[in-house]
Length: 258
Length: 276
Image 1 (spheres, rainbow over the protein chains, first blue to last red):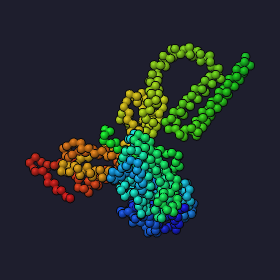
Image 2: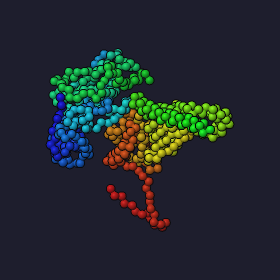
Image 3: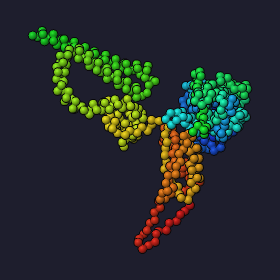
Image 4: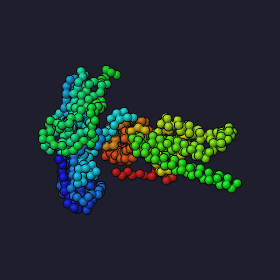
């Protein structure tokens, strides 16, 4: 399923608003023109419409095309992993399971003509995410960081048009409280689904077996149960191998251990 | 006599032909092997390993071809005589090539120790540059203003080398000063917020903010920001702009030395008017 298909009339400007990002689109002869502007206020969702010349001149990039005037716009997850951090401390009690629905700002993928890898002309993040480092200073992983109020993340958000909801199920299979300081989401393994105007990914299931033990991380192959009438709109960036095991928790050592 | 000369020159011609064929085939074989390995194996290797293997293959190939040529030209007798004289020659060569051998040995130590790789940004003494090539006797640095510096391996062994891009993230320390009238706690909060709002400044490890000293004009601070090594220029330019803008918005004064100008001994200082 194609998320949005645009047919651009020659020499007409279109604007795509997603959050603070405004993407201006033009078709000139065989060329695609893409311009990006930052707006002062975030729009409530993805807005598409014809537009006159933008008030602030965007930074234009041009791409050669095959003469067609169809542009496909697909929602995707960011190109880097995302670290989700709680604003307030969050713990999972022994033997309990918590399901969280953090939302991640979407990345727009623009394809000229057809949905082939070689036809991808641009990827634009709807929001500028800050970077973080997951690991030690001499070895680790560069990721984006997203602060979430976990107390509000127990239910999927009702309106999250320029965000993708990523369900995470955390099972604490130990006899100790599990303080979750940060969660590393390898978003490149996730599929994007649309369901009643909300975008979802498949569920990530994390089983915590204790400190010093490797946690199991499983990426469900089906859309999450909350996404009714889910339809796939984008495939994962990377194909995952079986039993992807990753360091997804960073546990604060309890004071007694020092 | 002429017949013997003719036979000799004919034999020599055959040998020369064989030498030419050996050289051409050898050249093609060496380059073919390097190309083949480049396509099959080298893709997964680092630039450094690729360069070392390529040079190893080329040098080994040249030695083998040289031995074949000696064999074809039947120079074994000459070679043996040369070897006989090698005692004296060896001493002469040894003295003459002391530095070169030292450089080769130092190069081997450097390769095994691996303090840097091709493409790393390093500082050797007061020289800063990207490692451009690692050779038998020296390394070549390409400076940031596009100059080539040759540093002998022996110098590298005995000099302190700083590898700036060894680790994936770095910290940029900015020295700051604020006026004595400022509330330090508020200054620290503003600096934290500047770091948080800059997308290239890493959220973790956390920015380092240290009050350093009471100076002549103000209180000195160190503002240390972690970043991914490739974002150095972007972050440096952006963060200075952000600091000056936010300090101006928050009314935080950055002190600087003031100078009073006197027209002469008997006169009063020249009046200075501050305009906001």
